Image (cartoon, rainbow, N blue to C red):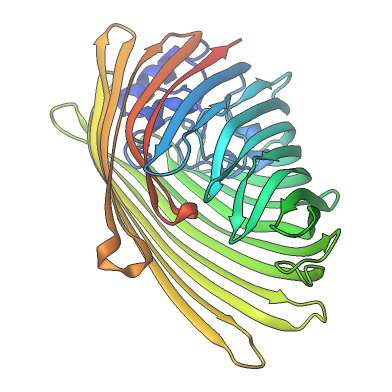
Amino acid sequence: MRLPSPQKFPLLFAALIALGTGPLQGTEMRVDTAGNLTSVLDDETANLDLFLDGNPAGLAFLATHDRLDLSAQWALQAPTSGPDSSIDTTVPRIGNDDPILYEGLMFFPSPDWSFQVAGDLLSSPVVPIFAGDSLSKGRYRSMVRSAFRVDGLALGLEFFDIQTDRTLRAGQVKGPVNMLSGDSRENELRLRTGAALRVAGGEDKDSPLLDIGAVFATHMAPDVQDMDEKLSIPSFPDFILHQSQTATQFDFFGPELHYEIPGRLVVRFNCFVTETTTGYDQRVSATSAAYPNASAQWSVRDENIDSMGAFHLVLPLESGENLRLGGNLEVVSDYSINLNQAQFVYADQNTQHLNGRIGIGLENPGRSTWGVQFTNRNFVDNSQTGLGGTADTADSDFEYFKFVFGGEQEVAGDLFLRASLSAEFDNYGGTPDTRLWVPLLTFGPGLVEKSFKLDMKCYLGETLDRSSGALQSFLAGIGLAGSFFL
C-alpha cells in the first residue's frame, strides 16, 4: 500500500518511520542493489500490493502525488565459450518483462482519477543462440494505464504494446546447414483490466486494510512472429526458410488478496491462470537433402497456473530496532500439448515448480537495514513424444539454491550505501556432476531527498544462462535510476 507523501502529512510520516516501514519512496533499483532482499527491505516497489502484480486498479491506491521515474542500465555478459553479449536498456530491473511498474510518468489530477504513461527499450547487439551463431535484438514497450476510484472500489484499464525485432547473424545452424542471413519481427498488443475493493478496519491510520482484487488480460489482435532465414547447404542452391508463429489465444486472469496492518504485517495471496494457443507454420523456397519436407504446420496449447502466498512482518525490539521477517511460497503448474497438422496430439509436457523464499533482517529505522535471504526453486519436467504410437518419455529436474547477504547503511545525511553478496548453487538436470556455484557482488550509493530519489547499481560476478544448457558467464554492469516527485 502506498502512503501519503511526507510533505503533506509530516506527522503521519514520522509515526510510520517509528514503526520501521523504512523509506516510503524509492526507485525499483534500490531493493535490487541490496541483493533483491524483497523479504527484508520494504518500500513501494516491494510491499506486496496489488499494483506490483500489474493490476491497473492498484494505481488508484497509490499516494496521490505525481512522479516521474527514469532509469538506464548497461550489462556485459561473457560466456566461457561463444561471443560476448551486452545489454543497453531503460528497464530498472533486467528480467522484469511484464508488467511495467514504476516507470515513466504517474499523475493524479484528482483523488478519483489516476494515470500512467510509460515506455522502455532494451537493445542487445549480440545474443548467442547456437554454435557459431548469434543475433541482435531490440525490444520496445509502451503502455498507457488509468484507474478510477469511488470510495473503496477501483477499476483499472491498460493498453500494452511490445515490438521485438531480431537480426540473425551468419553461422552454422546444424550439421552441414549454414545461415547466411535472417531476421524476425513480432508485435504484441494487449489489453489488461483490473478491479480492486479496499475494506478498512477503522478510521485510524493504524487500522487494518484488506484489498481484494482481480485482473484479466488478453490480446487485442493475434501475436504474430515472422522469421526469414537464408540458408546454405553444400552442393545445393541457397534457399529461404520462412517460419511463422501466431498466438491466436492469450488469456490471463485470477484473484488476489492483500491484507495489511500498517507498519507491522503484510500478507498476500494470489492465483493466476494463463492460457495460450500458438500455431506454427514452416515453409521452404526449395527442398533439399537437409530439408526434404520442411513445410509443416503444428500448434501448441499451454495452461499455466501460478499460486503464491507471501508475508512481511515487523517486530519492534526494546533497543528501538526492528526485526524484519518475510518470505513467500509459490507453486507453478504448466501443462502443454503439441498438435500436428491433423490436430493429433503427438507430444505433451508437464512441468511443476515449487519456489520458496525466506529472509530475516535487523533494521535501525531511517539509518540501516541488513539481512540474509535464502531462495530455493525445484523444477520437475515430464515430457512424452510420439503419443498414440511408440512414446518416448523424458524426465528432468532442476534445483536451485541462492543465499544473499545485503542491505543498506546511512553514510552521511541523506546518502546511503547499498551492497550485497550472493551465492547461487545450481543442480542442472538433476545430475550431481553439473552442480554450479555462481557468485555475484552488487553495490551502489543511494540519495534520498524529499523531492527525488537517486540510486546507482554496480554488479560484478557470474550468471547462468539456462537456455544455453547451463552456460556459466562472467557478468558486469552498471545502472542508474531516479524518482522525481512533481
